[in-house]
Every structure is written in C-alpha cells, then in structure tokens.
Image 1 (cartoon, helix red, strand yellow):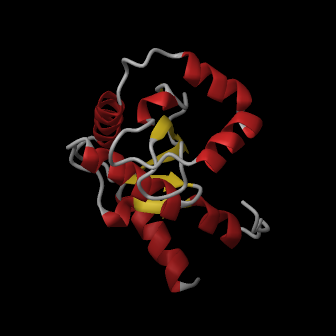
Image 2 (tube, rainbow, N blue to C red; image 1 turned 60 degrees about the horizontal axis):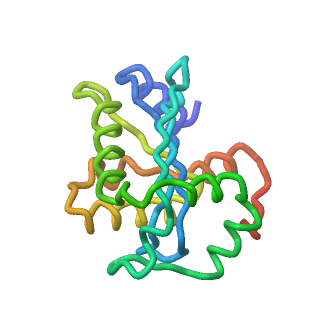
Length: 167
C-alpha cells in the first residue's frame, strides 16, 4: 500500500470532515466580479440540503469595487437564461452584504467546532478569490483557511475523467 493511500485511510479514521461543494454565478470573470448567486451543498449530508442565495445582478451596475463585464452578461443571457431571468426579476433591495453574511453564517454553521470543513469548487482559482473579494469588500471575515479550499477538477482528473480545456 502506498504511503499516500495509508495516510488517507488514517486521516479518514481520525475525523469526519464536512465537504461542501460551492458554485457561484458572477457578472464578471476577474477576482473582483460581483456574485449574483451562491450555491452550496454538504455532499456528506444524506439529505444533501442545498444552500442557495440569489440577488438581482443589477445591484452591481456602477457599484464600486466590483467588476461588471458585458461579455459575461451576454454569456449569462444565452447559456443560463432561466436562472438569469429569475435573478433579474428580484427586487434590488437585497444586497451583496446580506448575501455575504448569510453565506458566511452557512459555512460556519456547517463547520461546527469539532469537524474539519473542506470546501470544494470546480475551479478553486476562480470561485474562492471572488468569494473572498465579496466577503472582504463587505467587511466579513473569511470563514475558511487556505488549506480548506480544494478543486473538484483535480479529483476528476485523478480519477481518470478527461479534462475539457474549453471550460
């Protein structure tokens, strides 16, 4: 048995980590893009209770500290049409600050104090910097550390699933 496999088995027996998959929808592609939707699910939860928070993306238009990219908006209109139209129908009173607070509370609640939490995304170099920007701009402490962020695409690659370079 390789040392890596043995180490994984030992780690698995020591703790019951909480694994949360995160996905975001944005109005841009840079680290300072505004987030109009956050989805998360505890993948070890037998009920797979979903967290989802959506705000009207228009709240970011001309808002300082956030990227607003017309190419991304065009893509959202074409590729994510029903979700995008739903978000645009929402009131403009819900704010990035409220979304950031509710999301941070969700992560803290899921973490508990005795279980380590692993956060996963399909593109940790995209999702996490944007989430951390949202939290920072809104004055909210990031509820995770560097070692808790993981990329699900790495697991897919390790399991032999082909990588698509266009995504």
